[in-house]
Image 1 (cartoon, rainbow over the protein chains, first blue to last red):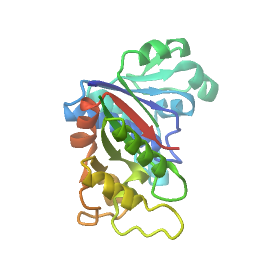
Image 2 (image 1 turned 90 degrees about the vertical axis):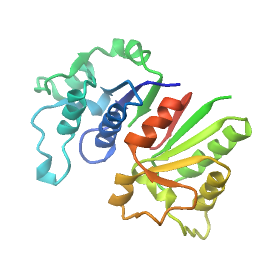
Image 3 (image 1 turned 45 degrees about the vertical axis):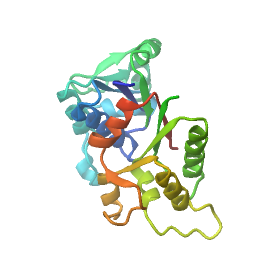
Length: 119
Length: 118
């Protein structure tokens, strides 16, 4: 039986509902108490979600920045692959609390979870 | 024998994702496994009663058959309401629930999670 889940987010924050849904899914897992550990890994275009000062009100969409902050407030970890972020937004300021990791570390991190859910 | 949770995030039509997911559920049951299905995002459209595709497989009928055989089938309430699906419109034997109460419980009880999406 599983009590540790990681949600991999590959999609950018806006344009599709995927990234927001993934962050909320992880948060729901933590709030439920049924899952001890529910974290998020931002990879590929998903690393755009890590960037600070998102202004989703401009397109009348909910905030992915807020969704990730809510997760971190609940002690969830948000990992971000630094090589993927640098390719897309080198030098961008990222949200406080996000853990930058190298691509080479992804496998070791994923090994810590029984369930992997991809968005 | 194990417990498999299938998360479906594609809708009833326009692609074969839901058909594949429900075939997977049937195959796992035939192998003696227990299956739970959670529909999220567009996947919540699977639960709507009264589906009537003219030329394609009726996903609603398959879902009802699975529910009547004891498969737990739950959809995300927030996603359903966002798409105008109200309580009382769901296929018999299925449930409008939540990530917090249902999906998380499914995950905690399962040996494997498979996500069908695109």
